[in-house]
Amino acid sequence: MPELRCEAVRWVDDEPFPGIVEVQFVDAAGRRRSSIDKSSVFARFAELTPESVYPIEVTVACEVQGDIEATSGDGVVTVSTCPDGVTTPDGRDTFAVHRSRLIP
Image 1 (cartoon, rainbow, N blue to C red):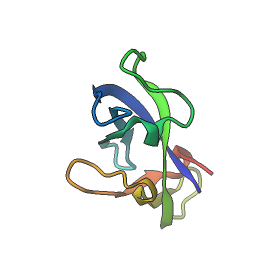
Image 2: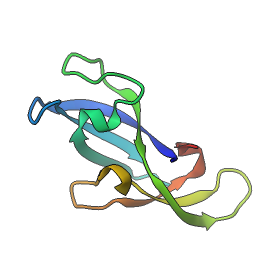
Image 3: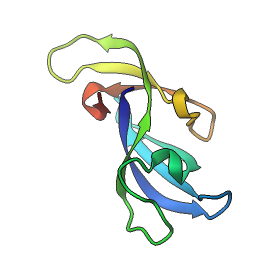
Image 4: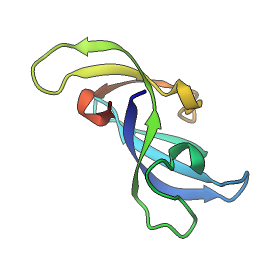
């Protein structure tokens, strides 16, 4: 399953266990998107704790739903972050991102 490259930018709260972090990424239109979820969802490459030095590169599992632009270079795809239930504060889980933001 592909993963979307993100950055954990801050520790939000210790509860519920194992703690909550805010994660951000930039979509294809250049908008900074934010999600807040359990640290374990994003901690595939690094342990996230209140003492960690942020930002930290992390990933979130995603599903590629299709190509938007089939141009040369860095194409744009639609992805959903639904595999781990990750959403933005307004409930959004589908985004257009540059293909280079994905780890196959």
